Image 1 (cartoon, rainbow, N blue to C red):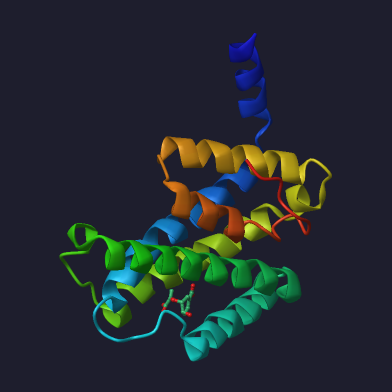
Image 2: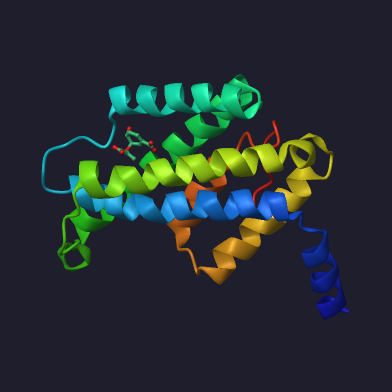
Amino acid sequence: MLVVTVLLLSVTVVPDISGFVALAADRIELADQVAAAKWGTGQPIDDPPREEQVLASVAERSVRLGIDPASATAVFRDQIEASKLVQRALFRRWHADPGSRPTHRPDLLTEVRPRLDRITEDMLEALKAAERARALPSCERKLTWAAFRVSARRDLDRPHRAGLHRALGSFCGAQLVSW
Ligand SMILES: C=C(O[C@@H]1C=C(C(=O)O)C=C[C@H]1O)C(=O)O
């Protein structure tokens, strides 16, 4: 019975929603590299000018893609807050446990942010593909299930699950049920 239920739920996950969730998880996992790039440099986790740049580019690309810029901007504000949530959690962990600190410092400007920018482009395409699914009453249920599946498949730990949860907050235009 459980197997049948799981199979039925899997086929009802709209690929557009799970595609977006997978990209949100990629962005959440990339927060580790962002944090490693900043750790020990004195560079703060919050970078408001960069955030404005990301959001301005999202608004501009949304118009070109024909999706609502206000809604896309809200979704990306979530991505930014989620990334900072994970970075702060990692900094706390690294302060408390020196053995867990990163051994390599990637370059934020030339390595990490270009990867974030590529994910942003893919996420906007995924948002466009998910436009109809986002407006349906089933959106939250499917989103919750997709998030649960990607968290399990990637074995995300608590801070990353919390980050993913934060990242999906306004995807359906309503509060996401906790999982
Ligand atoms: C990811 C970064 O950290 C924060 C989060 C940002 C984001 O998610 O796009 C942008 C700027 C920072 O406030 C970064 O500095 O690039």
